[in-house]
Image 1 (cartoon, rainbow, N blue to C red):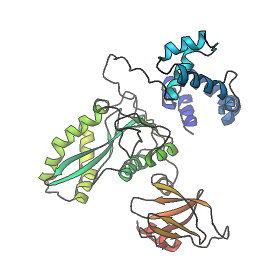
Image 2 (spheres, rainbow, N blue to C red; image 1 turned 90 degrees about the vertical axis):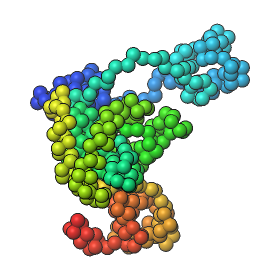
Image 3 (tube, rainbow, N blue to C red; image 1 turned 60 degrees about the horizontal axis):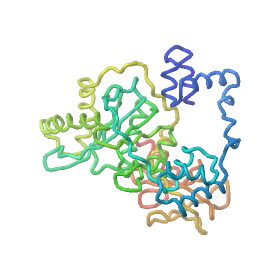
Image 4 (cartoon, helix red, strand yellow; image 1 turned 90 degrees about the horizontal axis):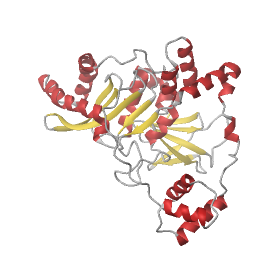
Length: 386
């Protein structure tokens, strides 16, 4: 869907091939190849047939294990380069040095060398709105005697703040709320830059590299939406967010005190209706390209809510119940099948504490925060009231 959108905008001369390729995360040459295949074969032409083929030079498991065992038993104190010389000269090794080095590192037998210091320069902004967004939180005494967390989601290209609100404590639900407000207001964006907070990323050691394979609830939701997540490894890497919070900590408490606001609900209303429009008018800049990379969200708000929520898999018990967080959720009688015993289902937990059980894409039932079943009629009434 994203390629189709970018292809259309390129054919209408709204984007260059370089810009479209950057937003798609591929090289310009690859984007041209995609366009040629799409024009010749339609969407089927984008399928990569190589995924079904095994590489002609793929290394067998036995050969890999023999090489690793050789290192562990005889050369465990050697560097990767030193071992490679022995492997090639004394043991008839045929693989390249780079393959040996990477295999040893992946097995945890050698460590990566420290990266040499690079010449640092100010990072260029994204070319257009929607290409890269920042999300971060700041704990501060925003009103006298009270420390709240301010969650802000802003655009890298223009420093426009799309979402900002106070919560008692930053977490998964507050991050979901920030992303939801951006998508409902502007549409889907390309990538999101965050710190390495535990609700964004899992790390094997404190302050270490993030695990991009084992995802948090937030990471799972971003993957479902096709939004790339980018971790920041230093305060300097989050420079734009840090500078924004410096400005907010100087200005916002004074604005709230001037109006006598001391309740969180009032403060959030002030942010939404008054402060952010004036802040963006004062501090936002015009991006390099005035076109937008946002893709309109065409699905229903309820579908977005069922992506931006906590999801846990459970197995249905023999009495058609599901246990979740100390609650027993009874699945009501369904028309499509007699029971769901031993079936794998997903329990969705929303920010307001309500729950729902899904079997694949089908919602079986909804519950209040205490685990009591909500009938379809009640659900419709609550939706109309909201």
